[in-house]
Length: 361
Image 1 (cartoon, rainbow, N blue to C red):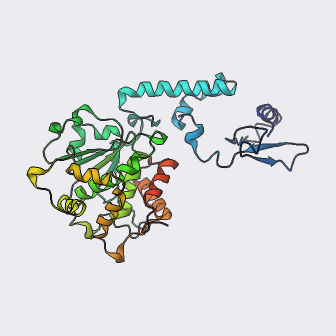
Image 2: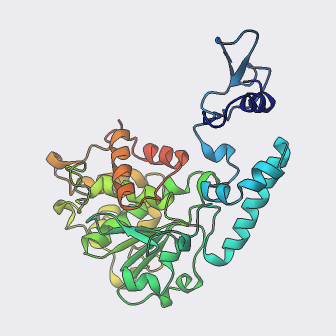
Image 3: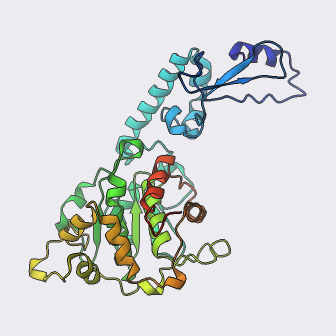
């Protein structure tokens, strides 16, 4: 409670051969004005005097707010710089910022984008830059998994949820025949405000339509741990068979009731008619018409999607999508892709997406 000097004094008096010193650190901002900063004074009742500390409720809940982009991998690699060379709080922040900036610059040529500070794919133990989620037909991967021609060797449809594209994918003429590609321009983390929720109905529709046609779908973001995981969770929660997930996490097949979903049925429901081939204007190479994409990204896009899915649902087997159910889905996804770790902000967006009259917890 008294600061670093007190901790060092305490450690110096201990017998290193008999004890292992564990130092617990609060991420709360030190301040003498608890009311102004909405902090709470926690008194140390075991000690005499005015010992204690200011605690900011929730300060340690969101590592994105205080980590400055450092990850466990970067910390252990540069711990001497951080712990030994940096003395003051400002010097520590400067050291971390320098390390993170250098990491980003080094990764620019290795397909790491958007500030997703994670160990590069080539440092992981996984053989491929993607993981298939049970029997769902969905794979989650990093940006490297979506690089052509590699992606077309493994997948029939690719969903890119970043704000950047490979040059080869920007032109529809470069997409192979019978392959499909959708780019949902969503920024990473807190830099995105509403785009993930805006594009969610389109991403889910794209995924379902191609899964119902027995196509393998890759959903990727920069590192395959945040945005792509959120979209996968939404898709699994809505139209995959989630019975007995705890006993059989590899199930997750698309419900038989959705086998009749098609681009034609989606067009008829949203536009009121099937688009004639000569009048169709496909959104890039997604298989979705531009009018459908425009409607699904509009203000009522989520409600349109839910209403469309209801026409195929079996009421007796309808998934009850609640916050608790989404946490279960995340646990199942993490069994297949251990780096899956959507941020708290992303989880909040996902929960908010389902807060309609039907899906609200």
